[in-house]
Image 1 (tube, rainbow, N blue to C red):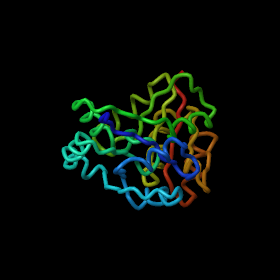
Image 2 (image 1 turned 90 degrees about the vertical axis):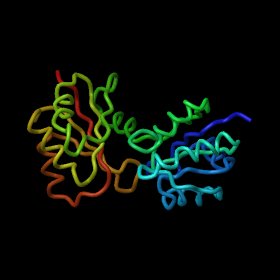
Image 3 (image 1 turned 180 degrees about the vertical axis):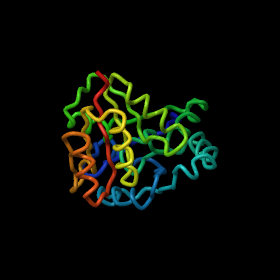
Image 4 (image 1 turned 120 degrees about the horizontal axis):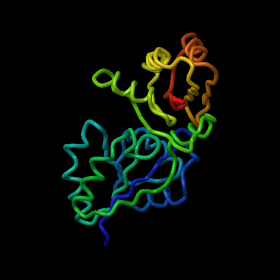
Length: 223
């Protein structure tokens, strides 16, 4: 039997945004590696999937790595999912994938949900070339990353938490107040919102709002 790890994207909000192939694989594997088993359980319950789950997240990925490789080498079928979207992009997965490659284990990554591409398309900002920045550093290296983004000539995609969205927008405004920007939150969910307008307008709107959910910033490149 081929030794393989299945990387399975999961819905970023709407539980119907999952492929038939993903559902079938989740039903077939021996173990599902879940970032948060409580979150994944909701998805599995919807599709009557009862397979065994193991927690696999940023706090235990190093110490569980050897054991997971051992399971795959012994013929067990494993699938890796994150709470939302494609594992490995701003979510655990890279370490396991790299270790699998070192051990000649095949990587079967399914196509599927990810927040950055729908956000980019919906923004209306040029998407022929873009850079995915993910989450910015909280402290060390933050200013350097921000300056790189400001001077980048292609569109930038930035992920941000509700706790730091205003801070990041104010920092961007300090360096490039007139740059075209679109901010989106909670894609595919009930409270999905797109904020358009000038950077200062968006800052003012969010300053007067109760900020919840995950945000995506789409920033036009430097002319």
